[in-house]
Length: 393
Image (cartoon, rainbow, N blue to C red; front, top):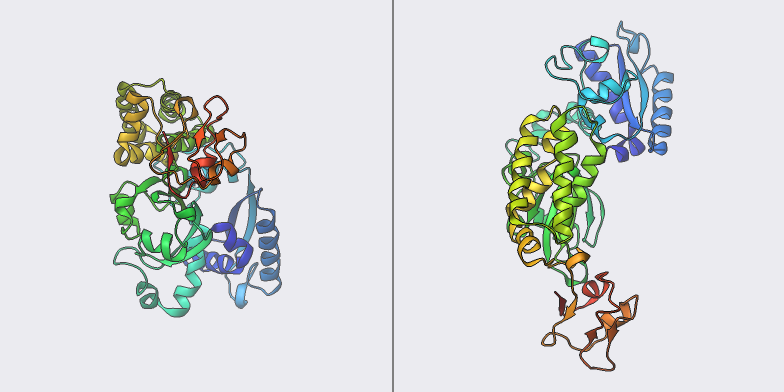
């Protein structure tokens, strides 16, 4: 989302930063950008050069005593540098690790000086608010969450891409009206918001308005605006493991709860997905999650257990199936998946057979198909392509 703004309208950010600098009396600004976004960096530098040429940045702006300039600082892509104090450390040329607070950046930020930190998307709204007025902006959204929000809509949805919606738009509207619904006639199972630190929203909360308060109440968060839609072929235990793998790899290692606690949680999830877990492991997961949330230094560690907590809350039965029945209903955990075709549902269309990459499905004409378990590699391709939902454990 932020990259699209820097690539498409970088001047909106520069103008907002200049306004903010004038308000607080700052004369220097920094934009922290991942080096993996070369187009954003290039266009941002062009915009900064243009602003300097027109006298919008530099000294004596608009023939006043106001001086302000902006510098780009490149990051190496560390997720933890999204935390404000880790970002400051990185700009100063140090390793990106969060600082213990207080003091807060507003009191002692870059090089010990008071520092204002805001997100690119926040800055991009400033000029429009000043031009159109606060009443105009407040007329969009909900009582406590004003304006619009840009989401990166992806996953099992027909229309993927960036979408901007008013705060308070329901998840159902985003998925089915804007996103065009779920491909291949599959059912909606969950949506994950807020990126790796967010939570999963189940089907029963499809009509939840998307705003800061509502998402927090159901165990998720707005975060950076990622919105991943999942159909009924997804395993929620495997999903929790996927997000935790990312968090473990991105932990800066400064505090023990995040560095070691998330690793222990990941080990438990790996046991579950391999069919080696027990119900005691579910209890351990919950205890670890609560302790990591309470004891971690920064927002990354405090929010790292969120995907696990939310999936346990709404899809606990799947965790129990992995522990007790040694079964994955979505067939994603291959260590305990046995794919079969239900005779009463199979119509003999042969679509599963055509899509099987290893020719493990047998049958001809309008015969009901069967799966050769010796050949089956449990890839799940047949499950995805069956229009009658006749394939499962």
